[in-house]
Amino acid sequence: MGCSGGETGENPAAFAVFLKNVVFKWPGQQRPTLDIPIFSVSPGEHVFISGPSGSGKSTLLGLVAGIFSPASGTVFVNGVCLNELGSAKRDMFRGDCIGFIFQQFNLIPYLSILENVLLPCRFSPLRLERARALSGSAAAEARMLLERLDLSPSLWGRPVNRLSVGQQQRVAAARALVGRPSILIADEPTSSLDADRRKVFLRLLLGECRSTQAALLFVSHDQSLAEDFSVVAHLPELNRAGGEEAS
Image (cartoon, rainbow, N blue to C red; front, side, top):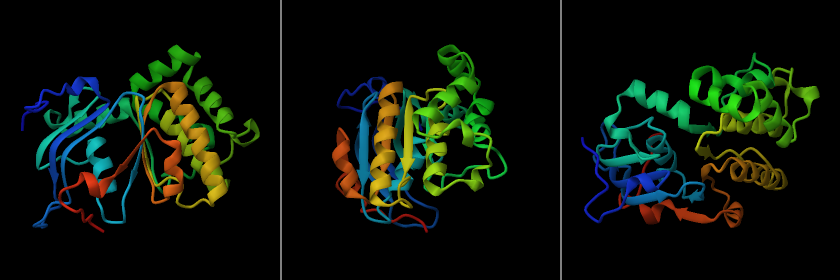
């Protein structure tokens, strides 16, 4: 399946994320989960994505991250057409360009805070190189991020399973940001926090994204968080299919 910006003349290279006529459906499904005529995110833009459970939010993030491939249509990230990359190259591209904060954080329980944050630099030479160029070393950048996310040095040697949920969340954010990926994806990262802690975390995350000039795609059910974003996208309004994610 080839890649094209489409007949209306858009330039995909001008966007951090650009989807055109994207259709995705799970195996065995008759109806697609997603049918999106167009969706774009500019470099450095912060986008809040809302929608009810089953509307296709996580599937959309998976397409942007190259975890899933569309049945039709094109997905560009940083001007690169993901449709034209094999699975190994998509994995490498994701590691280089995208930081991911998962709903359950996906931290490695037997590693320390610092070791967890440094993981992307072990798998992406490009992020390791960026961290060294900007901060002198990957460890120095990790320590800087942890401090700015309000995690004191006295905690850095602890296994992450000895941290509170809020602390684990900030470790996950530091891991996503290390090595300055150009795009950050956050899938319901505040769902296990109370309202006050959600706001505190979001302020910290947005501040770091502004500092690194990263584009942010942030999915949440909590509409009260939307006011802090420059763009709010309600997925059912973008999705002609109506959406029905696999459970």
